[in-house]
Image 1 (cartoon, rainbow, N blue to C red):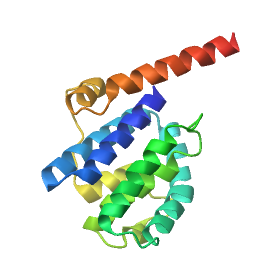
Image 2 (spheres, helix red, strand yellow):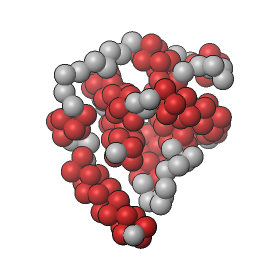
Image 3 (cartoon, rainbow, N blue to C red):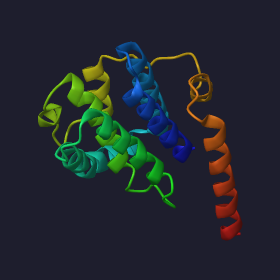
Length: 172
């Protein structure tokens, strides 16, 4: 489920990047954070992911922002990076190289130098919610949101189900 939720979060971020109006961008961004909150459903998970994102994700964000890409090039690069990321056999420790650069790019359009407000004590999910002024309360399940917004849920679920079946067969 964690892999599915991470992929849904990234798909929502891709749509937020490509959105042509602020309302659509905020809808996709809120959905990304809904998927994120489901994935980080315990304080331990939230803390572990947060630490890695601060250490690795911020450095990756900085490198990408210093690349000199124009807006269209940046959006294409970020989307392509996500698509390549999906080919990784595991997402452990590597997810932060996708999440924070994508959130960070969106943040940079709203608040220049936002990264200067981050310390090791910052909870990035809470920071994102506060900075974007988003309310992620919903009476819908994450599956309903994913299907309604066309985040490739069926394909993602199928790929991850097959992957899990192969993993369990290998263990057996």
